[in-house]
Image 1 (cartoon, rainbow, N blue to C red):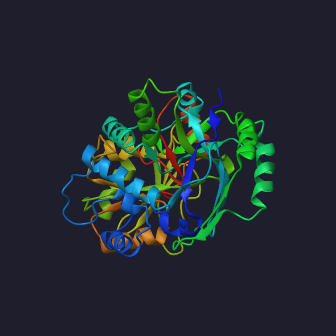
Image 2 (image 1 turned 60 degrees about the vertical axis):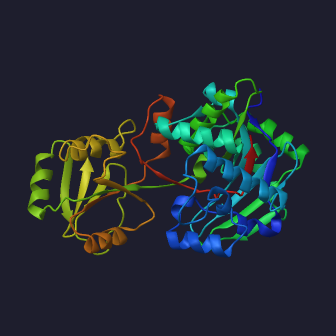
Image 3 (image 1 turned 30 degrees about the vertical axis):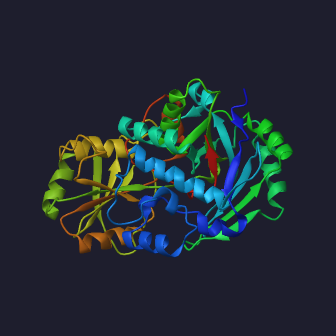
Length: 406
């Protein structure tokens, strides 16, 4: 069984690729979304948001809404804004930012291969979201965003050969090459059927793969495949990159409605000294936490450096923080859904986090150090799950740039 396989790739017309590809629907403000929908007829946002803004005759998340998504997708196909790139193809995708570059393979992953454990997971999913996305896939019959997977480029037997082959391919002019307004460059090479077959053969040795982003998409694809059990082995679209090219940032925690004085924080931290050492630090020129086991606690008045004494490869910082502070002090049992907890992507600096508090007092921010790949892999290898929002992992892929019809 070829578990990493070419597939019938759909992609934007080359001259419209920069206009079609979109960020996640949820990352746009209402004003940004309105601007995109009113000014860019090619945006894939028209597919995933077919009813536009304002009052909706059809409720989001229902089968009738998903049927409208499918109809809009078919319109993009009919207008050739989205085009078949050929049967049994792989693509090479490179994403370049000011601080980071990654190059990997866009391929299909066998559902049977995932079931057999070739893809390692580390995040628990919500059943209701799995079922919703499975219903979406079953109705729309296409997936427009690959999940992000990584392989150990220091141990995979074919990693060097794959890197050399990709280097040879990417020395040629890309089939699509554009930069988006967030200063990210997107370069795509669509391989011939022959080159796709050769690269897929080498890629079979990339086992296991570790899922970096897209746990709900994996779970819903498995559920959708179960709905169509009479069909041949299905596939899930994935973007596969070397582990060394993952960019992992911290995922910070904001505790709302605290309204504690500095003395109250000091007294509470003193009581936790068996588990957490604390010291007040100067804010001027403060850098982000510099290693695992270190967290910065910011309030509107001051900042503490917290040292977690139990931090280890098997016990990540987010779990310790949840146990001793959020649950132990504030009684927060459900870190995923409690309204007192808000999660901030690790793209903000210490200075920006502190400024956020000066404009919104009565809160506290726990600035996290990024989780390591070894912690992610250790958790996945033992079949465990990390706490919710344990990491902010890049690259983030755009919707509509690669499409797999189910």
